[in-house]
Length: 588
Image (cartoon, rainbow, N blue to C red; front, top):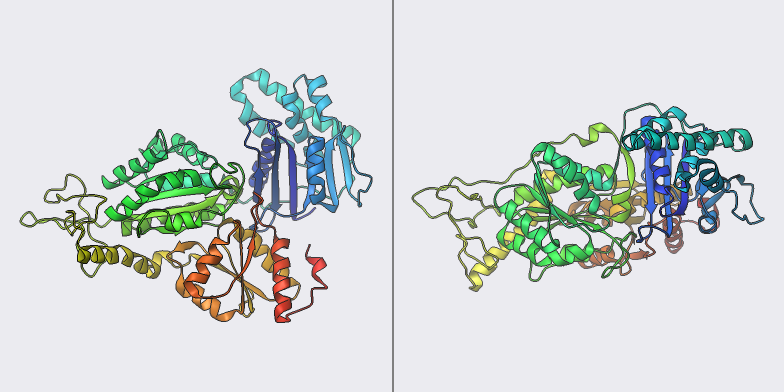
């Protein structure tokens, strides 16, 4: 039995590849195992390469794994593309008609006629994935009753005939494996501790975090890979008295958010890069009018329409600067599925407390990632609210009052004595249009002073992850979903005798200056791995802290791999004479 097992299921979109992986995840979650997944699929509804990788462990993990222990291939194309990622002593389960290379490097191979069993014996090719599940049930010693339970949950509503059909497919896959395959490999499903674990995607965690924070108004337009947020909220937000509205486009969505928030409701939208581009002008309005809002951007390969179903972390500049003029906003970036819950909930607290837009950056890999979450991590109630005024009847209300505080009280619509102007034009304290230099300077300072206050707010403390050797001269700074491979790479390097430490800021505007300055004061080299071409975070760090950085960028539509980062660590160590590169082979 292996305490840590990485499986990959690969095939064609429409073959039920994701269903196989998700079923394995549900079984593992019920067993109390820790899970991290990565899935990739084509932009087409049917056809094209599709893959889900599932890492199961008895211990807490932060990355979906690199090379795999167990590979399942449903066709020849999947085999040809994924076989190089199978470990030398791994296991291959594939369609019987697949041609294998002569060199197997000690791998165990199981060949099963999935197509024949599905089409000839069962009479339905679409049941092929259930046949695969039955086969895996035998080979990995999966709890068969659990699989039957999940199949019942999935198909019972479609009628007895459909349910019986799929149960038959499961049984035939199991029987074939039992009669013909035996057990030739050492792998079994890891043993869990039966701890209760929740299983959710990053998008679901975002939606749940928003709901737990008191958000009750969602406006959005469907766009990959963010649509699942709106889909989840459409089902669940009305249960707590909330409203979900699908608008005609992204501009309508963000303007609706502005209106609902101005009226006093916690409001949000979700989108991807193309939608965030369209929202830029209204983000400026939110900043100028000091209206709270939360915008989630699930990034994908760009620019333009780009690669809708592939991952990239390339919207940082857009999130930081996307609006004309000097428009204030907070930018945050969770690193894991539990983080998606926590950071989204915190985003609402910051938006409400400081009356400004907050952009939460995730990416396709994190949005679609299935991960186990301990129930205690998602218990949350709002901890900050909007500062509301108590206007005097004998004096005009100064909505944008200048004073010691950068946050001025707001009078919600209908508040007696709280009449004021709200506009996208520069304004005086009462909201009246003003374009003199003194007013514009004072109001700009007021709006930007909020960012300095946020940096020192206890709400934002603990928004940095630190790991590695605190005495190391090599440092790594990264962000978003790249935190997982960075953490694994740091562990590998330290085990090789190369001291490395890393810091992952989860708030990117304002940057956590105190933590970053302390970090840069300890290291001699700074590596910045990120999923974009120009090195956006590296550029931000250089311009802010006047430090040299070593870039490591990738735009292949898939996450960074720990070995890619370790290679850069070793190259950097050579310049510091930390150690020789001759032992690096063990890292892969």
